Image (cartoon, rainbow, N blue to C red; front, side):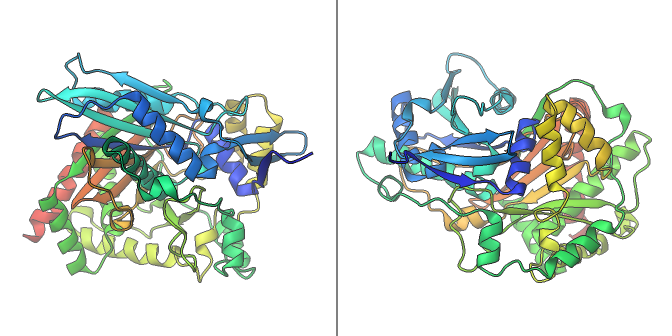
Length: 474
């Protein structure tokens, strides 16, 4: 009998991703605000056709997750025939209502928070279009949500651009590359790193030594807690003028933009603590993703589906005088980022190749609910880092071409869902991305651990701190 599907066994680390998503964290979403200058009336059938082309192009958009609890194994199974009927397309028509940007963002957060089922051979992704009016013209927001095991920040952002390219081609009666070229499934992160000599056995000693070092904690104050489950989301941008100033200043100081914004987020959080009469630690734990697609040789296409991101953990030394010593602290963090994201030292693999990852998976295997598993994990792992930050940089802007057409992506953001209780990742995670000369800034938070007024104040303090660093130079 012929095999009617291809199976891709998940590694221990990939099973961690699946279980993390089951707990409500790290399901990723790409949000695109679409410019529609010609006031074109987009219809659901056109978008569905585009998603079918995407499913044909990317095998893992046609896969389902198989979980065998008896053997503690998981696999991504790709049927040889396409399962178009399983595509989940949600169309939210708000064109007859007066809506604000906040309304759009809240609806996006609501869609993001709704679980993606892994039962009944369901697809591991879903798509939403929000239709609304602005200045009497139709506008659209598109939300692509995937289980983290089949995509990462760079990949899902590129997928969003591909969808728009196909939609525009369908509107104009043309064919684009995304409609004609089908991609092959990627191998997993561990296999690729070993086959292409990015990882070697000597790195294991470094990983072991690093994880034996006791790290400082950064926990949000109890007074921020709501004890109410939910996901908070905000999306905003820094305009071209501000983006250029930040890039110019950072370059003159000899630091990367990642280091600049990481320091900004720490400084702003410290202000929020002090405003609430809460002590703030001198040493800060840092967790950040480091994408491996451009570190592998040869490089991996940014749009190809599968999670290819390492998670890096380290901590600062005692930071300086804050208001008087921002650039010294930014330089310190810059040097740490260079050190710990280096593939040569092995620090890059301090989470992906951690030995106790299988213990995490066993918690989920032998408990009835993800909440119970999280409680066990909370007791087992005492590390606390409630602030996560990711810079997707200009990679998507520079490498993925957006075709001319009636619709164009004006803003694009990446988000990680945060719903787990007890939390197994950070309480707050931010992503920034360079797009068409501007900086897209996303803030997501676990509402159980921080209330909306505190998160809004944190956003204000981030913008305030950015202004201060620029004005102090000028």
